[in-house]
Amino acid sequence: MTDSVTKNATAKNAATRNPAKDKTAVASEGGMDYLQSIPHKVVVIYIPLLIFLFVLLFPFYWMTVTSFKTNEELHAYRGLAALWVFEPTFENIRFLLFETEYPRWVWNTMFVTVTATFLSIFCAVCAAYAIERLRYKGARTIGMLIFLAYLVPPSILFIPLAIMVFALGIFDSNWALVLTYPTVLIPFCTWLLMGYFRSIPYELEECALIDGATRLQILVKIVLPLSVPGLISAGIFAFTLSWNEYIYALTFIASAENKTVPVGVLTELISFDVYNWGGLMAGAMLGSLPVAILYSFFVEHYVSSMTGAVKE
Amino acid sequence: MAAASDLTRTEVGLFERLRNNRNFLGLLFMLPAGVLLLVFLTYPLFLGVWLGLTDVKVGRPGRFIGLENYFWLFEDSVFWLSVFNTFLYTVVASIIKFVLGLWLAMILNNHIPFKAFIRAIVLMPFIVPTVLSALAFWWIYDSQDSVISWILIEMGLIDTTIDFLGQPNSARASVIAANIWRGIPFVAITLLAGLQTIPPSLHEAATIDGATDWQRFRHITFPLLTPIIAVVMTFSVLFTFTDFQLIWVMTRGGPINATHLMATLSYQRAIVGGSLGEGAAIATAMIPFLLSAILFSYFGLQRRKWQQGGRDD
Image 1: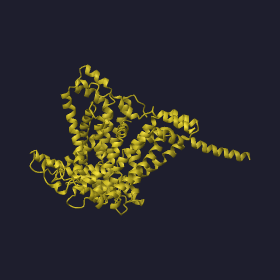
Image 2: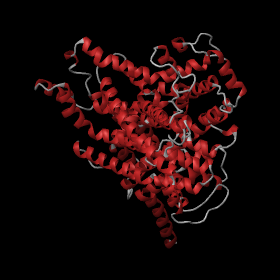
Image 3: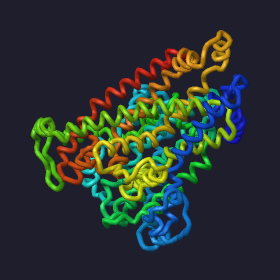
């Protein structure tokens, strides 16, 4: 029985595609493009675009270049020549990896991020399925409340949470972050997954119910396989959000070995009056790499989830 | 014997009924998310309001002091400066983010080579941890070795390096610029998605009728984009208003409190200074503004559904 259900589900998989993607695909690409002459296009489109790209990417370029510079090259005034690195060195990266607790912070961030992401996705899947498909009494109100929860910013919660974290005895441990990050992640993921679940035809579930499947079986064997793109989107979003989180990590963690990358780089590497800019930039660059790499693999998912969630 | 079998039958029946009862199953499925959100979101929200009415300090339980914190804040010029800064920061950054974001979205809506790739790299500032890109900006704004100063000196535009973060007004401008830099991609990419849902036939019809580029923008693009603009800008305003990371990394509220936002002042007073009650009061003072932003978003959403003739769910 379950075999036929899954087969049925995979067959429909091709038909029910990511709704957000479909919407964007509808638009035709510049139908009246031929009306614009080439010089006009250069002035109106390409030059502004190049300026935008330059401004948006320059800080990353500068971050990377600085992290390979020696200390002398960093402070010697060279005019425009400063934009390039002439004596590249791995000293800053070596310093970061072997003389600071940077690897430890990366591990902490990784642990907290991955745990919080999976916890949030689990909660969000259950909640979104209940709201969207079980349609219990008051489901719509709860759905709206979850959307409102997404709008509650961490900056007004960190003080009471700090007191709670202390009272619970998890202050200065990874668990303080694992338990508080989902408050940011669950609302967004639930909202996103609700959109995906809505696009799955009811008939599939009805068939399964008639065949005697329980709700849990339906969720695991029909709904989840069909919403893999949504799960990936939610996962990527949750991952980057918790990798970026700062104020909770800054408030709830005190000892150097428990810090996350953003907090550690800022509080532990800046301890003297003369800043070690090379080391700081190397820390910023290496700390950005994991999210950047993950993002580059799933750009489409990320964009569709971001735009889809806003359009819902 | 007959009674016993009856009993078991009703018990099984009860279990069966529960298993198929929407409300019971709904409760069961909502439990993990519900518990986490109630304990770590709803409860602290009210706890924060309560703490604002006490004089709790780090390591010392507080007692109820009514609105005394708020009376203190009312007299406190630094608090009012932070309110002013927050509004300045939010209004200026949001407007510029919107204008530049819309412009970038309209550029990207054209037929250009490597569009997907360009769209992907445009989002980079939004992906990379804010703290780490703020660190890069801190270095770009360095008072001695700022790359901007170097380039401007090289071009002969200025003689001495600019002290970006050292003077109140230039510090404000600098942090606002960094915030804009981080916010443009979000606005641009979401508005681009909105632009792509506008049927090209409308533009074609208007062009045949002799509409200019500006008229097409003013009477087609903008009205159709309004609902999504409302939502995007609500998010943007909300996150700019409660911003903490950029300021804390680059200036810590300095110089002479010129860049303190309400969120950074709240952190400064509560965690650095130890007056949790006062910090909570400042955080609570942000709630009315947030509520108005949320209401705005709600009506924006309503309007959008009504406009497109969609269902109200």
